[in-house]
Length: 298
Image (cartoon, rainbow, N blue to C red; front, side, top):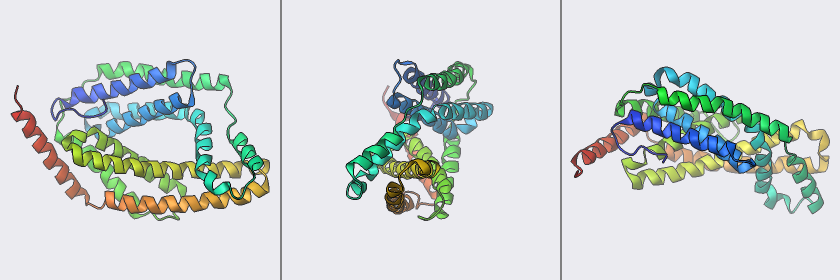
């Protein structure tokens, strides 16, 4: 389960969570036949594992850089297998707006262009490369020497990510470039994962925050997919009818702006609290949790 179950023996829990995520990813990638959904789930496991590493970075110590890089490269190796599905899903976001301005024939042509899959040999090669990175990594994690850890280790990871969210958000507006929005998206997702890991601090409050962060992460994910679709259109503009492009690109821009306004509004609320006050509050929850565990019968 993707959560810290008690405020003690953090080192063992850190290792266990990482191994669970890697085992799940390997399972998804070794099931035949592969599918877009399995690729998507494997990439999610890699992102969740990297978020655990960032939260417990002081405990990961010398293992952090190499492990984080291996997980990043593993995700990138299979990213192209997910891109085609992402483009098709993004087009579905646009369907209500496009239905009134594009004919059914034009919509079908556009969908067909976006849905060209990679060759089977390329897919197998990408999965094989990813497994070659992850399987040895899982074996290495078993051998890591990890300290027991404490709130100080958790606080260091929380502080770094939360502060980065506030810094990135401060410099964003709806017209900021796609790279800056993508960077905030990744940072929000890490905070979402950290909140999931710490759900037992105060389940009611943390679940509410987790759910709002999921909404924000989904909006930012849609925004990123729209940016990738725009880039794809510009790279393939000679193959797309000018009439379709003249409708598609402004429609994407309008949805971009709407998603970004919503995201800024929600993000401003989620990260309104100053970093030191947020950490002080989380530490108070942690100390209460420790006391409850200490006083628990048995």
